[in-house]
Image (cartoon, rainbow, N blue to C red; front, top):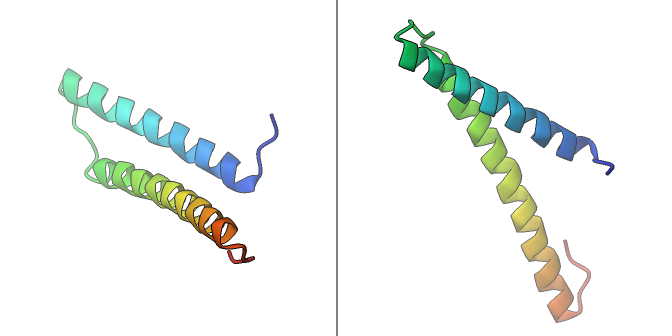
Length: 74
C-alpha cells in the first residue's frame, strides 16, 4: 500500500499521539511526576489529527456534492 505525504504524516502523528497517551497514563499510574507540557502535546497532536480528518471529510463532501450537480467544483 502506497501512502501519499499527508497520509504518512497522519500515520506518524497518530502513532506519536498514541505513544504519548500511553506514556502519560503509565506515568500517572506509577505515581511519577509528569511534565506539565505533556498533556498539551497530546492535545495538540489530537487536534492536528482532528483537523486532518475534518479536512478529508469536507473534501469528500464537496466532491460528492459537485458530482450530484454535474459541476466540476472542489
